[in-house]
Length: 183
Image (tube, rainbow, N blue to C red; front, side):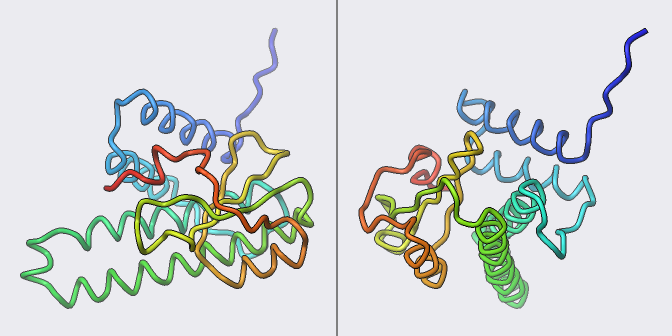
């Protein structure tokens, strides 16, 4: 008789995320659909962010949780009918976006500190957006395949510089097709 290995919540989360990335890369999902599907999955999980980051998995989950909620609410803010009929809702969505991007940056800081800035690199990426160009940084965690973090937070840049992992150069993002695609 074979022992069944029970999958953890993190196993399921990372498997679903990989499946969505695969569908996006294959062209089965647009960037907008990728964000929506990721948002729906996270909300169905009904797993709130962790207060303390004491594992890689918790840090990445918090990063993804806040990132996808911010992006999803940005999508909603672009709805022309919503803008015209409910400007107060647009202000609420904008506040949510800003809140979740701040929380995402908190998750990045906590994760980098948990990892003690080991085996990672960071740099500015070449962005097509004037707003993001020379602001958006990419952080590669070399011990974790395919893990790429993004932020525009200057405080994180300073921390990365102090730790000696920030390169003051501009490179093409490892996920350039995703980062530079509008949604």
